[in-house]
Image (cartoon, rainbow, N blue to C red; front, side, top):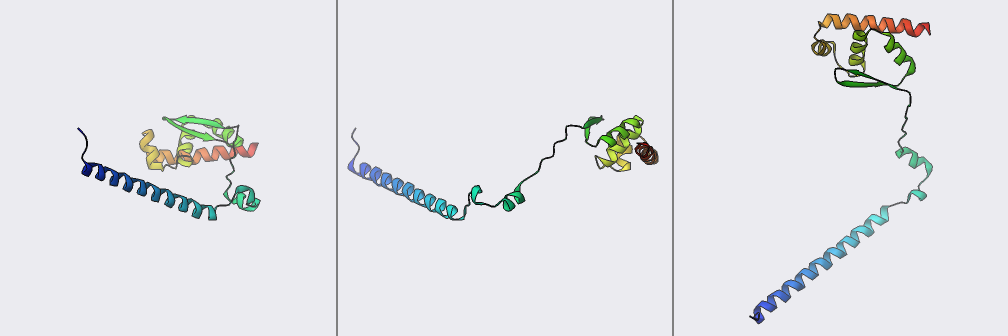
Length: 138
């Protein structure tokens, strides 16, 4: 069956409208690109001062210790602090790491370790005293 002339006319009109819409979108896209190009600056044209403002310095320390407590990993990079923490009894070390590195309160630590809040406080303060003595000896 041969399409009618009316159907052919409709198909041709639809084809024309689609081509016009695509051409219009192409022109709009190139206008958009030219507007962006007016504001772009090559990195080679930017001064060092401006580049340094956006630069991120990554300090990678090869000497660090990872302490694992109750499924949580805590990374410590300071050598003196690592030695002082290693010198502590395990319970005091856990409490200090949870308090200072995981930002947990005494109550949260007490719930986690199933201790009294006052016991956590005493272990934390006595652990700090032991760490201070150890660091002063070195």
